[in-house]
Image (cartoon, rainbow, N blue to C red; front, top):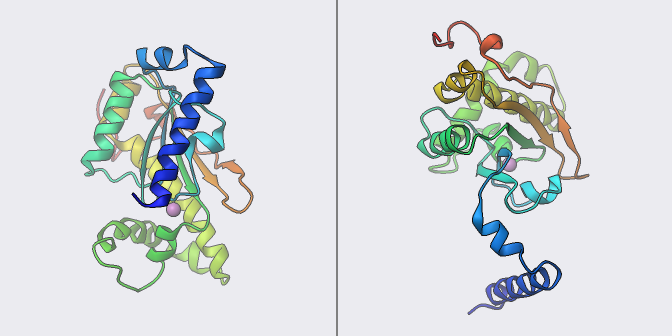
Amino acid sequence: MPEFVKKLLGNNQKWVEEIRRTDPTYFSRLGETHQPIVLWIGCSDARVPANQITGTSPGEVFVHRNIANMVVHSDMNMLSVLSYAVEVLKIRHIVVCGHYSCGGINAAMTNQSFGVIDNWLRHIKDVYRAHQDQLEAIDDAEKRARLLVELNVKEQVYNLCKTSIVQSSWSRGDFPYIHGWVYDVHDGILKDLDVTFNSNEALSSLYRFKD
Ligand code: CO
């Protein structure tokens, strides 16, 4: 087995031993229930580990990650996670978390073809197109990319609000609150983008289903 992979398994053994030593009933407690409070929709980027950057432990955050933290309404994976989180786990908060220096966002801003992933990046190009004037008013490429990261998070928050899963839950007077955050890989700081929703009221009538 390659050294690095061996190291991962060794780390796991040490981690288990350490927890068993300090909290002998930890695993039996954790094994009994699954009641996370938050659904995290983040980027697959290895520098943005949901639990670590929010100081949460195993069991607290239900996690879905993909390239550039997208909420694509025909994505069965995302819909299944969302449905289970909202309807079964009854999670109270959904966080869409983007991050600066996102490879997916940067790739979508170029004209280069990257293969099959182009089809995924198309969704980001659609976000760009919706905000093209605002983005192209910025000369600095880095600043433009940072703005697209933020605009993309906001669009994905709106995409969540538009799903029948979230609208139905809100119509019943239930959770979730939906939040948009951005993480800076350069300083570790999470910023709230102030796009929190918890009712159908804010939805444009075009997307709103009758109660
Ligand atoms: Co990313």
